[in-house]
Length: 97
Image 1 (cartoon, rainbow, N blue to C red):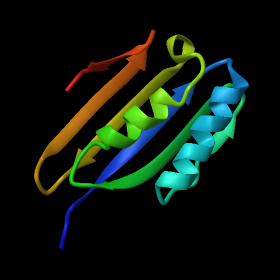
Image 2: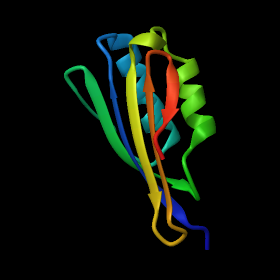
Image 3: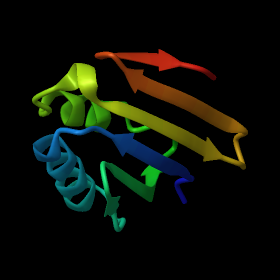
């Protein structure tokens, strides 16, 4: 059986079109419920093995105002001791761990 990682996702932006795109993308691509409130969206969803890099790159590519979006994702999978914490800010990703 494949191990699944847990992703804790948070995004904020004042661009409501991008906020709607983020919420729809999460709903369409992951088995999760995205919670939108004010200028932010949060969600928790599974992914196979590790951080969903391909999907997150697709999400960012679809946004209008990439430099005004703040995203953070904590991904962990206990059995294999995998942890990743990434922040998207001012148009680029920073990998913390």
